[in-house]
Image 1 (tube, rainbow, N blue to C red):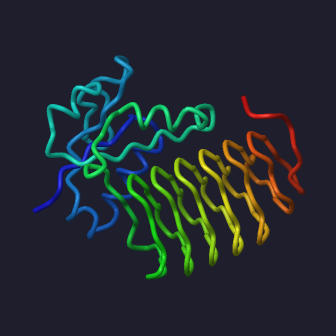
Image 2 (cartoon, rainbow, N blue to C red; image 1 turned 120 degrees about the horizontal axis):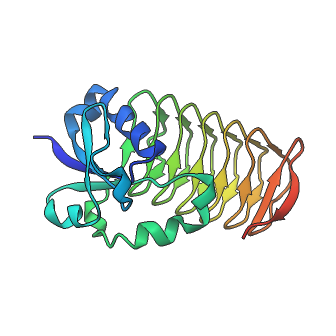
Length: 217
């Protein structure tokens, strides 16, 4: 029997998560997406491919038997992701973990709860991806990479071996990170950047090579 699943919020990443599930026969069999949950009253009654926004957070209590995937992932709110997700007060046993079947994932890799890896990703040996993370399509995560909780990765990201990404960081689409780099907590790497040196905590960098633009607010 399929497991019921609620997606939060009704944003681009949640809708892409829905498409990820529906495009994979194994996931579509495992998960029955019964609806979206969103705090914004203007989102009520909106729908994606026939699946509607059921309401606000009260829906989690109305469907206590449903699992939850919470994927707020816009760069404008990346520093608030931990607060938003923790504020849902979801029991840890209810969090889903979603990995599309087109992804190559080493058997000695660990992927945390409330984390999604979207289609055509490559996750190499001895990688650790923490809880509450989003990895968009066609991203490559090489050997021995350590990704902390509440991180987001855009599409077509390439992370070389032994990189460490600290909590609540955001890596934009088409970013390349050299081996042995350390990305400090709450940092943002702008899309298309090439990272060849460490990034300090709470720092926004961009460019080729990536350079500091400002401190994260």
